Length: 171
Image (tube, rainbow, N blue to C red):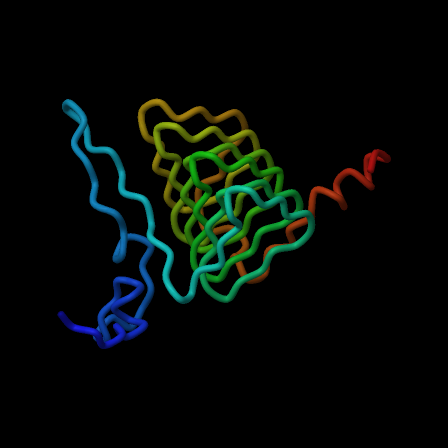
């Protein structure tokens, strides 16, 4: 039996040859249900910030890596890489990231630099801007889409839920 501690790369499912982060490089395997493939879920690594299932976050959440939300978030979410909203998550926020994958519920604006994806159980209510849209059968979306690069994710001015409510006069 090997008693040596695994390196951090092995603990997080990455080998030392992986340089760039990809939300699908360290994903759980896709499963086949009938005639369709169930999309894989991204796996957290050392560059991932996680809002746990029993956690509520109010305010701004910013990461130079990736953010996974399993609990409740109100405010803004900004990630340089990816944002994953898990199936049990409830989000009322403005989201800005390179890639956004939604399996839970999101209400608010979403601005992606690369790809926006809603998994079969995902529900979205808001305005979405992304150059690439992927919407799986069963997903529910209410809102507007804008395809194209638009403003980059780095220069986009996202307003938080608190700021939007203040301008309407209800905090």
